[in-house]
Length: 334
Ligand code: ADP
Ligand code: MG
Image 1: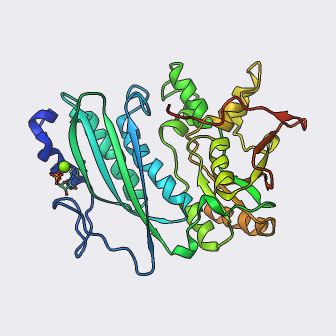
Image 2: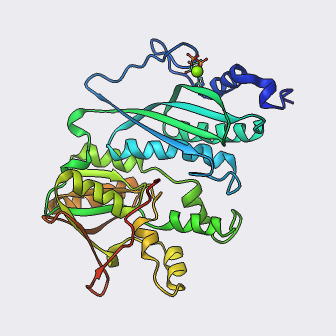
Image 3: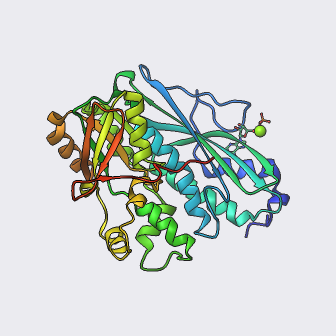
């Protein structure tokens, strides 16, 4: 049995040693955990693609909602999703932890197990990080680095009027899962598929990479703050607008079944709930069949939900053809 039973007996450097032992390290001439800085070598001709995401206890997660292992998986998943949306290949990541005094070592170990699983699934190497105490809750910051040839990288700014607007997978399940968790639902019930979309999102890495490398798209973003907010970012940065047809949104049977029992169909869950971690992308209509074919090889459903327009706004149209007025476009912190 492991003789170390608490984080305080392990100490900062003991914890860093434990972290290093759980994750495969970069091989020479690269350098990972253990020196003042990491040394990394991107492939020749590639640009480095970097993104970072912060998860704060009480703001982004509640350790009472599910096992720490899933929080570990999600901490990397949300970063992998950013790399996927750029059409890049994930390579390395950095983990910074602020841990409250007296925090359970078992919880940290569960977290690291999940993180190591997700890292192995995506061949992403932990190359360093930082560790300190916290006077508040647990804070997890992951910085991810990927790479891609500059001509293949997809940005938010490339959409063109006339493009079709696509989304991968389905929308709204994660926001509905969070609502159910907040109402007291826990894993082990009939709603598990919805709860897991919130607790253990699957980044669309393979699809994003395939789409970028096929050169079929004009712009891409991942849906973290809700479809309307994130499609809004594409429109803003591309200097155009979009029309979204609510009747075309991909919704799972579980989501539809819940929503159809509500007095008013809760469209905001699918439009602005957020944390879907699906990809939203725009492409010329002439590439429609090729995109469908490619998504099939990636094993992920993709759906056209509207088109890019010349206006500077995102218009949402109800199944009966009238305009829908969203109350908020997405999650904002302040
Ligand atoms: P410094 O004092 O220069 O910040 P540290 O003692 O914090 O260095 O870190 C020592 C080594 O351990 C570094 O290589 C750093 O990247 C790594 N490290 C520290 N914390 C973590 C962590 N939470 N996850 C991964 N690597 C870490
Ligand atoms: Mg440090």
